[in-house]
Image (cartoon, rainbow, N blue to C red; front, side, top):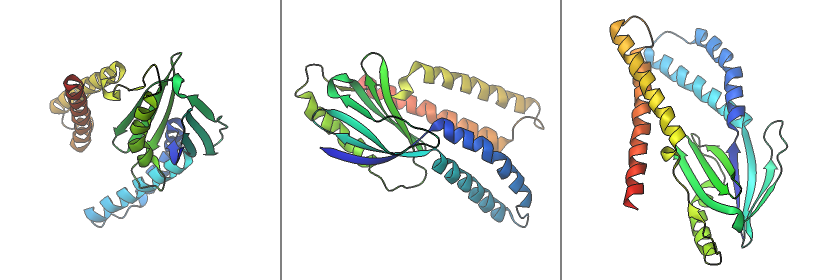
Length: 222
């Protein structure tokens, strides 16, 4: 049996915390010293990091995952704020596939189950944490391969989130919106988002299209 202690996050709790903390963040901007650009940038960074840490801690829970010859069991050692989630005990024959998805400062792990069900958790990774998440991600495929020897229906690795049609449609809409903002900015340079904001938006768009391209290339080479 292998056991892993993993810190995980609740997205909707993090978003709710972000919405509640944002007014205090905007209020504090009025007190940023205006002496030098460097000091302003450092102060901005400290405020953003503080807001991130608060939202991370508010949305965090801790689970202990046990992987045995009979299946995967999850026990809550620290519940999410105001939550009482049940422990789970999944036998191997209920698991269809698994997938680890790594994004910028956010990772997820998903088990697709029979009867159109799934087990999934998220983890924020901007700051280092003392847990066994990366050991779990590294070792789980080998544990599945060992288990597959005794299963009639083999557990496979699932499809990347980047190849999901819903994600790609959302990316297409985001790209169209970004192009619209860029054209609008050229027509009227004094309105709309700043050039720095547009640069950040297009950096994100290019980053995700690049990941879609890489995942499609890897899938075609299999």
